[in-house]
Length: 267
Figure 1 (cartoon, rainbow, N blue to C red):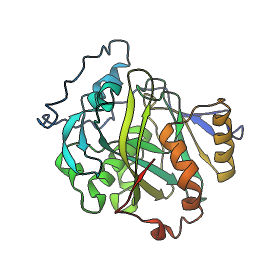
Figure 2 (tube, helix red, strand yellow):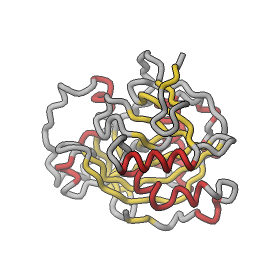
Figure 3 (cartoon, rainbow, N blue to C red):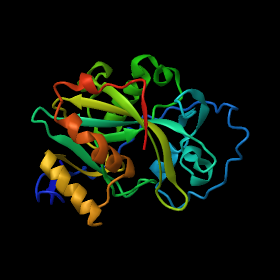
């Protein structure tokens, strides 16, 4: 069973993922297309990295242009190498913000096994649709929403029937770039997805080291602590929180007025 830890925001309510291993990664592979033949993929030694996370580097992400048009597929590993990002490699991603019926936001702290941004606090779930037919489907972002359902199960253990794609709302997209360290980074067009419901949690400790539900006040305190370098937060979560999140949060019952499916916010 999970056990309570000291919440970095309010001193209570932070839960550590149970200390067992899981293979709920939901990995889906696909033959790499030839669309990136002009970019020579660098060789990077991953022997020192977590074995389970290294296995996930073989997943095939969706390559896109700056207008989110699909142009090919490439491994998660190659999509997250700064050397490739500096040459313009860009992939599709999503960020889920899940609220319970008390209007509290579920945060996670990424595990120290994560290759990019380990130990950072972030929104509920952040990942990538994969280059296979179900997650490539673009009508009303259904492929991205299916990917979100898959990863909510893989990371947080939320039963898939509790978060069907029709309960996941697509608001808008952001385009951002950030370095994690000298080797790894992110360059994504990120679909912003909202869910509000009470769910069952059973996190995978290889993905998540802790989690907690927070109020707006508690999140603002966490952001203040991050500004003082007392805790770490992911760069995409910082951008979203500082720019959009609180006005969305104030309107959970009226999110339709914030839907911008034609717009990509350049951050």
